[in-house]
Length: 115
Length: 113
Figure (cartoon, chains in turn yellow, red):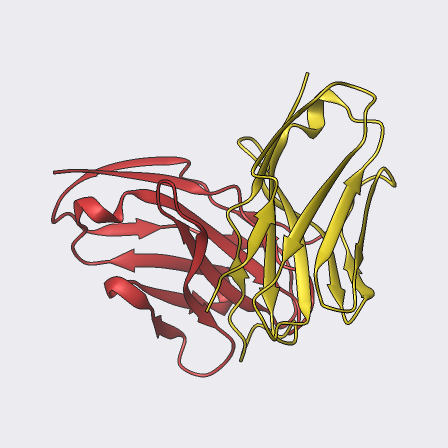
């Protein structure tokens, strides 16, 4: 079956712009988590959605937001982009969000460059 | 706040050498522990996980990890590495099932053929 897909794969934006990233989970998965990956910080948790509701949130400013649709697809939005937002944004899905009996599968990521 | 430390940022080994990557976490309560691997050009994938029971867990590709509660550690080991083990390895912790995952900063392993 198809894995987690993320679009677009690459984005170049300038400071002050906004961006929307999309994630389609594996069919049947209802939980979607987003992570920011940078060389210095590793992976940092942004937020998790389950059945269209935000269930967990990381320590990121309000410029970072997300949502989940009824088909479990998720989007994350970053407004007023800053240079420090340049990163690989990863999406991961599980059936229920419980990792002890549901493996979490990661997508390939969206590489965002802010100039 | 909960944190995860991976003290080895870069490790270079020759094939057949033994591997041990350190992982320590700061949370004092019950935790669930994971190791993920990211091979060059591939998605992040699960190597192994610990939730309860035997503190020595075995994962894919000959990897294992030992949970030592008194040391807040979950070190990853492999007796004999191969060139194909070249990758970045991430330790991760969640406080309870369904909670957010906190990752370490990763260890880049390069295996020389």
